[in-house]
Each structure stands twice: as structure tokens, then as C-alpha cells.
Amino acid sequence: MSVVIDETRGRRRRAGLLAMPALLVFGVFLVAPMANVFVVSLAPAGAPGPATPGLTLANYARFLTDPFYLRILLVTLRISVGVTLACLVLGFPLALYLSGQRGARRRLLMVALISPLLVGVVVRSYAWTVILGPNGLPARVLGSVLGNPPQILHTELAVIIGMTHVFLAYMVMCLDSALQNIDPAVLRAAANLGAGSLQILARIVLPLAVPGVLSGSLLVFTLSASAFVTPAMLGGAWTKVASYLIYQQTLVVMDWPFAGAIAVSLLAMTMLAVAVYLRAMKRGRLAIVVQ
Amino acid sequence: MRLSSSERLTDGWLVRAYAWGLIAFLLLPMLVVVGSSFTASEFPAFPPLGWTTRWYEELARREEFIHSFGISVILALGTAVGSLVLGVTAALFLDRTPGGATGVMSALFLSPLMLPRVVIGLALLQFFVRLRVSTGLAAMLIGHLVIATPYVIRLALASLTGRDRDVERAAVNLGASATQVFFRVTLPLAAPGIIAGGVFAMIVSLDDAVVSLFLASPRITTLPVRIFSYVEQGSDALPSAVSAVVIVITAGLIVVLERTVGVLRLFR
Image (tube, rainbow over all chains, first blue to last red; front, side):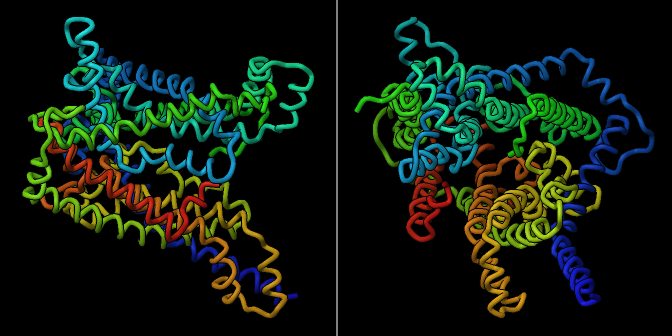
């Protein structure tokens, strides 16, 4: 009897040991720095270095009430919503196709879908500055039609296009995952009973795909809201998003408490989105494992 | 072959045409960049205005890009090794602990996936400065490990939880010791996820521009950050040449990985 108990205790101790490396690294280099950010955000605005004594919410107040910063928040949200919707609308038909494929063709599709992700966000965003810039094809073509070349680069639209390009793959994978869970027998039954393609889409596929729509939307929304490189390269001087503000305040202006307040606010927004998502999932009483 | 209405949803000509058209759209920017790297004009243009290889010659002269490329590769390899060590041990722990996959530890280990990279970069920079530690290669490596390890944990854990325990039980029945079972049955069964994790960790490290930007120092700058800074400051076509090199190397890596490890198999 005692042999079994000792065995279990020993095994549990050994399992615990396995957690040590990651626990150490994450504890020291993730938990501690995050706590530090929060503490520093409560310090009065000023130079970097050990926080000066005194706790204040002035940084948060400044970020959340100054119309200049609120506008940046609005732009960030607007872009995020735009990207999410674009990915949803553009990605759904592709996900439909992908969910019906198997074997080699499916793998080929996946690789094609993922390959833009593999070259890196900087290269990708740079590619869009070339395409959407004044010397790119769209501007040149539209310019000869309209007389004056339109300004596409350095606008919100450019940022939305650039981010849709990269996040489409994430949305398609989430949708595909949900679509795979649909029992093909149900679809076949509907077809047999005389339902047309659109009817099947609207009344069976879409409702059953809702978990994928929600998880994909959450993913793309949070990724868009926190994105830095693409908005920085495609947005230009007038289209600043929250993450760029954090960068500016940290490395240019050097107001670390304020930067921290923005960072914590951004985090709170992200967590709010996750909470909304989890609420929506629970409402539907769907037992889906969050990807 | 006439398709039923349900089959038309996933296999009809309209859906097929749309799908492949969208895929072409996804790959188009890479072609544009490669093409624009040959332009004779000062600024990047596609279709190129005149053909020349001067931008590649210019790139070969630029020490800082070659140096950054080296830094990126070193960091990628270091991140792969480090995150595999941290990630596989963590995944094994989560697999063996009842309720481990959904508990607090799991949330902690996977949290960087949900945290904005800007916030992680900011947090690490402030942390290192507060500790009077100057940022350099080690700091950069730590940053990369923090963002890459969760991917390894997720992929390794997926492989571990999905493995066939009967094979392990059979090994025990046939007299294998715990160590033998682990090294000769468990690890090989979890290998696809572990390898995928290692590959992902390398990609995350090579890709990252944000955390690397915050932790950059004059001597230690990764390639994405170098390209980013260059584009912010100027407007000539040199980044096209750099990007084209990255694209070609990435494509080459995909082909090599597929031929040797069969990475495509991982995308079930």
C-alpha cells in the first residue's frame, strides 16, 4: 500500500520539478516586469528610472480624458473593428472551401495561407507600402482614371488593408476549425430534403459556425488593437494607434509612468474583449475549447 | 459530376475560384516586393521602372544589414533551443498534473500569447533598466524566449495529450522502466508537436520586431528592426532588396523543411 503512495508522491514531486524552469523564467521575466509596469504607471509623470515615491492616478486620468488621446483610442478601435469585419467577410468563403478539402490539397492551402505570416511583419507591411504608395499600381491606375493620384498610403484604409492581409489566415483557421465540427450528414440531409445552397448556408452552416466566428473575431480584434508595426508603417503621421503611442512615450518622450498607464489601459481593453467573448460562449452553452 | 446543394457550398466552382483568387491575393505582395527590388528608380516601384541589380550590390556593401542578419539568426537558434527546454518541460508538467491544462500554471505559461507585444517590450525594458542591467544579446534572448515559449508549450502539449497511452502501457507490460518508456515511447510520440514548436519558436524570433525594438541597443539590432528603422527614415528601394532576400530564404526553408522533416504533415 505504502509503496503505491510513495510512488505517487515521488511522481508528483518529479512533475513539479518539470515546471521549475518555465516557472522561474516566467516569474522573473514576465510576472515581475508586468507588476513593475503597473506600479510605475501609478507614479507621477516624469523621467525613466526607479519610480519616484507617491501614488497617483493622474496618468490614467490624462489618457482617458484628454481628447487627443481619446482620438487615438478611437482610431485604434475603428481600425480593429474594420479589420475584424473585413477578415470575417473575406475569410468565410475561403474557410468554407478549406473545410471541404482533405489530404495534400488541404495541406497546400494551409501552407499558402500561412506563408505570408512566415516572412515577418516588417517585410509584409513594407510590401504594402510599395503597393499602396504613390508609385504602386493602384495609385497609378486610379490616378490616370481620376486625374489626380489618390492618397492611399498613410491612411486608415491602408492600415486596414495591410492588417486584413495578415490576419485573414488566423480568421480562416478559426472558422475552419468550427466548420469541421459540423456533421456533414446534417448538410447532406438538408440537401436531400430539397434545401438550396443559400438556404443551407443561412440556416445550418452559419448558426453552427458561430463559435468559430466568435473566436476568430476575438483573436483578430485583439491582435489588431495591439498591432504596432503595420499601423506604424502604413499609417503615417496622422494615423497613430495606441501601441505606437506606447512606443513614443517609452522611447522618445521617455515618460514611462504615462506609457505604463496606456499599456495597462490597452491590456484592460484586451481582457474586456476576452470577457465579452467568454460571456457570449457561455450564453450559447457551447463547450468549445478556447484556441 | 453534378454537385448537391450542400457540396456546392464547399466545392462549387464559385467557392473554388474565390478561394484560389484570395490565396493569390495573399501571395501577391511578396511578388511585388521581389519585383520592386530590381527597379532602376530611386524609390520602390512595381512594375519596376527599369531593371537593375544595383540594390543588391548596395545591400552587399551595407555592413549593418549583414550584421543584423547574423544577430537574428543567432537569436533564432538560441530561442529555439531555450524555448524547447522551457516549453517541453512545462508541457510535460501540464500533461502529468491533473487539471494542469486548464489551471493557473497553464494560464501563466500561455499568457504572453494574449499580451500585446508592445506591453511585453515595455515591461522588459523598464525591468532591465530598473535592475541597472544594460540591454544586449542576453536581454534580447530573454525577450524572445518569453514570447516564443508559449507556442512550444501549446504545440507540445497538444501532441502529448493526444498520444496513444496504450502504447506506453504496452511498453510497461513488456517490462520497460519509467525512463525507458519516457525516452523511447513518450518523447517519440510527442515528437511532431515538439518539432513544430521548435520551428515556430524560430519563426517567432526571426519575425519579431516589437520586443526587439524596445530591447535594441546600438550593437544588437535584429534584422526586422533594422529594416523598420530604415523605412521610417528614408524612402529608397533598398528595403526591397533586403525583403526579397528574406522572402527567398523563407521560401527555401519551407521547401527544405518539407523535404527533410515533412512539416506539411503537421498541418492535418
